[in-house]
Length: 379
Image (cartoon, rainbow, N blue to C red):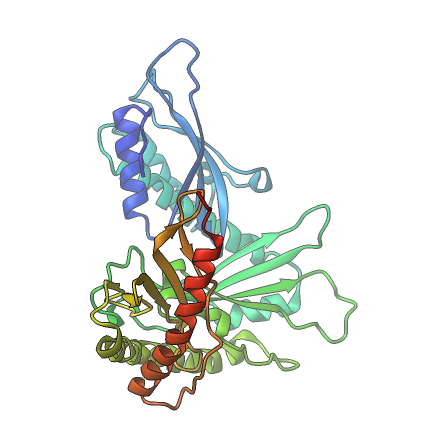
């Protein structure tokens, strides 16, 4: 990510923050506060991951006085968050926060990262304290049963248009997914979370409604495992998170392990295409989720793109043809729609799958050639 326009010391701190923070941070609303000083941009908004959402904090440097630490403005929904004035065990972090500010060294590129990490830890403690103060028996019980689990984040959210809710972000499975896939440079630790949202304040309800549940994951994980394909277990009456989570984690762990094993199944399928289509021009060497071959039908030369989902072989690959000889008026190579209506059985051997697709494409390539010729502008 480029930070052109910032003074070198701010640019270095931003680069270090983006590259070393444990999750993906967004930088937006970049501007300059100086009216006469031509030193460049010196303020921006950070979107910091928290509780499977983002909190937005404005970071305001003063490019005219680089020795000064930046000011930070928290969102309007966190007007009671005062990290410098926090007391008790939470306040120990406030002392560390003060030390970071008092020992500020603008030439040290790690300073902004240390500041944001400490503030985020303080914010987590602040939200946990707020949730603990909510007058809701079920919520108090839930917290008491899961407080020993590491990494749980919680947050109160409310607004003029919606009732008060408490959100939990619960990391699932104590397994290192990054190490399960060799050869892929993961940027961040890959995690799966359960988002649990409890409505609060409905004391008149004799039977509390179940919480809203949603599986979420880090973005890169989709290349290996699609959480959209996971069916969540039912939440039974009277159930709590401590009862629900073990069954979910056991099921997820089996599915993740199976997804890793399916990489080799997709690899064997791509290898089975080679005797029919020749060596692929390119192929995904890690997840084996796509491959491209050069093919011909008479004098008509075209590319065959295979898109292989994580649900293969239950789900057949999608195939797209791309002409090497026909260009649209916009300069884009002519392509077919995604093709997936062809003979298929997940129980076939990989070689039979490849042969049936090849036979299908022998006929389909003639249709594609006709489409390309008929849609080509006449001169």
